[in-house]
View 1 (cartoon, rainbow, N blue to C red):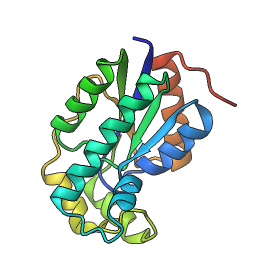
View 2: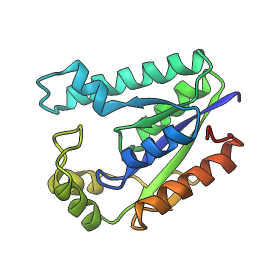
View 3: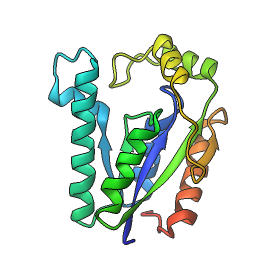
View 4: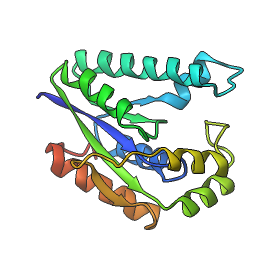
Length: 176
């Protein structure tokens, strides 16, 4: 395998976007963010199932394009709560000779609910405690090879741990 795609797994409010920003600063990664893609595709987004599916299709296409161009990616804006989306990402990545590095931000539902209630400025305007609960109810166990991070730790420690884990998992050199 020639490169990698980082898949951030976790509930809304677990810290995926913050970790993504940190890893983007430290490594040569190209961000593929479903929330941003969906907002661009649907300026009057209703967060329907069909809008989310279309945005996921675009994410997979962007990841494939990055892989074919020799670029490592990080996928944000998706919870990967169901194994089907992660399996799809693996198929797309592996078809280009890339591997997926799953990083799971393990966060209790109540903590994630509090965080989304406290942060109303996120790109995904549908984030609230009800969404966190709905996602948690359908959350499949992360894959056995997922790097598990305790998302209740201070975010600076979670970001540092994610960088160490990515570096050791991929032998990637930090940019800085």
